[in-house]
Image (cartoon, rainbow, N blue to C red; front, side, top):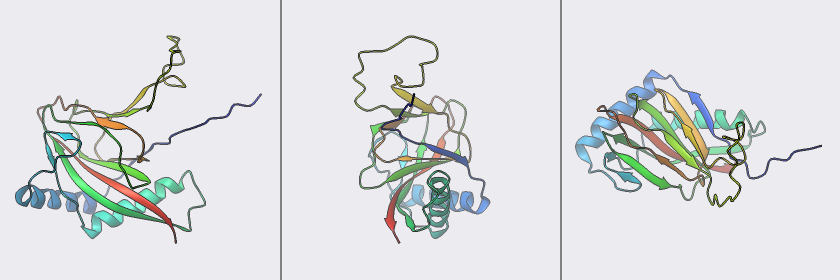
Amino acid sequence: MDSINIFCSTIFVDLLKNKDFDKAIKEELIFKEKNNKSNILSNRGGFQSDTIKNPIIIDTLEKNSFAMLNSKYTSLSSINCKVLNCWLNVNKKNNWNIPHVHHDSHYSGTYYLDVPDDSGNLTFFREFSYSFVKPNIKGFEHNDFAETFDVVPKKNMIVLFPSNLLHMVNPNSSHLSRTSLSFNIGLSDN
C-alpha cells in the first residue's frame, strides 16, 4: 500500500546566530523608530517599519533562505533567491497581526531578535478548512485534520514558509516587546 501526501506545506525553522546581523537589525530599528511612522498592514498596534535596504541584512537573509530551501530541494544551484522586501516589527503588550498572506513572492519569513515569554506564537492556518470529519481521536491532532499549527518563537529563530500560507501573530501577553524582522523571497532561474 502507498500513501501520497498532497498539498503539503513545508515550514523551515533554524537558529541563526550572527552578531553582525543582529547588530545591523538593532541599528536599523533605532533609525526607523526615530525617523518613520509605523506602517499599518496586518499589524494591530505596535511598530512596523518601511522597507529595509541594509546590505548586511539582505545578504544574510538571502544566504540563509537559500540554505534552508536547499536542505530540502537539493538541486537549487541554478536558482536565484532574492529578498524582495523586509521590515521590522515591534509588538508590545496586546499587539498582534491579523491572519494574512504575502502576495507577489514565493517564500516569506521571520527572524526573531527579542522574544520574551508569552509574546505571541506564529500561527499557520489550513485555508478552506471545511472538514465535516473532525475526529477527536488521539494521534490525529496534528495530522490530516488539523486546522492550525503554532510555531513558538525563540531568540535567533528564523522561520521560512510559502508566502501563500495563511498565518497570524498572536497577541503579545508579555509586558516586554517582541522584535522581529519579516521578509519576502522571490525565486528565479539564474
